[in-house]
Length: 109
Length: 113
Image 1 (spheres, rainbow over the protein chains, first blue to last red):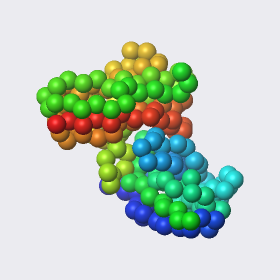
Image 2: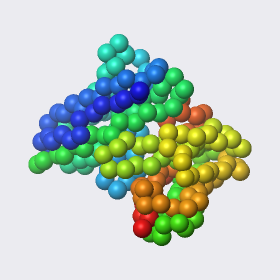
Image 3: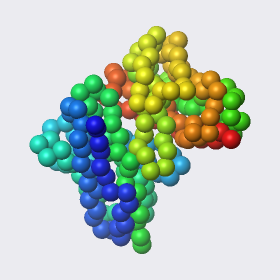
Image 4: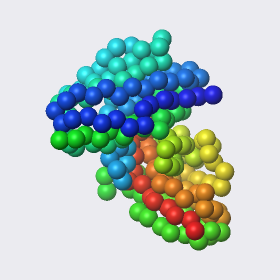
């Protein structure tokens, strides 16, 4: 079967750095997405990786290792507004998105 | 309007009633999707449409139907609601299908009693 694993919840301090991991087992791979979802709101796109390596976009970076079935989202200089759930999703061989359950990130002052 | 809109924002529905959730996008995206999101579970695809006039079943289609008469609208119908359909429903769209970034509507919170 297809599976996306992420930690359920993480806590970090304002101004610090946090890494949210995602491991996947899917039938084929055509890219990995990270989305941010604030409580009660819709998911919004953060990043897309299809090749191995690190993609940097401001305070957020996303890393992919296809051989390990592994990705992480790195958030730097954490702000209170970064408190949200972070969703990992993988495009499988049929180009359908398979979603993880999401990681709830709590930022403390 | 800009982006994707959904209606209603929330609804409480008696079991056995018929309900249509509306979704409209103005980005001229080819593909549209309906997801449900339940606590502790990831987004689960109900139905999708890669282009106007075509639809397909996702992971959890039972009890739901869709139509895609034109590019902009993608309504989701519950023929006879059951309590297990209590959930938050998100509509999304993308330019070329699941290969592209999906953009989400604000969601509809549905409670079936």
